[in-house]
Image (tube, rainbow, N blue to C red; front, side):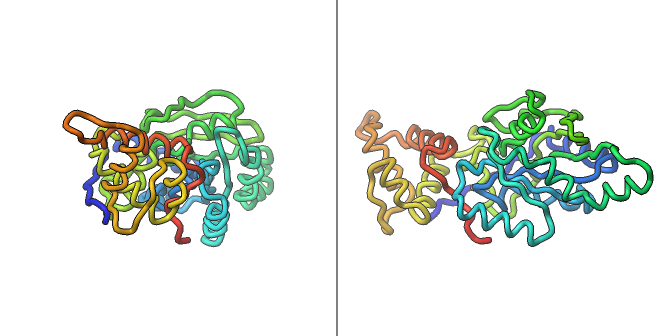
Length: 286
């Protein structure tokens, strides 16, 4: 049984970022939305459709190196079926990033034809790059630009202001800060964002978060926790039971004979986010 958590996260800089995006939408031809392949639905800001005013959409399924490859293919097919162009990338290694200019030109083929008819052949295509915190947006931009132009970090909320970046190939990108939304109606979505580090750990009960992740892994990828933590999942165990067993195997004993569940939860989250548990996609239903 999952432990209930209430997660809310909407700092002031996100209000400013929303305003900046709305002010600049008229300047762009299309939107490039970077999402986390491990949580393809939870990492999409539901406010973006309204904020981007129906502009053509290129969805970048990033962090594919950490996601279940079969499920990534299904999600890519799903996004194409709903009318978006889709690119599968790993910004850390650069895999898939080279296909970005061609994907942009395919997405905006009608716009390119219109420009040519108006005698504006060679006019720059402008895309706004959007994404929630910590989906690898800045790493993706640095890869397509072939130089370090966007600040990267494994902490959410590093990009603070806007900047235009010319990446060659007749394409210019507008980098924007990662924006979450004011209220999470579905706590599973909030939890998925917390698991992947899109929400700062400092505002949450890390033990409960770790227990709930352990439970999700038991349900969907039990072999991974058997291999990594040398524990045997059992349907009768809750998340805290599993966390305690893992802490026991690691020897995380504190005074009074108790086990250090906070330490174990932090390690579990770090290892999941670092890909040490293997390729895992937490949203399976396309």
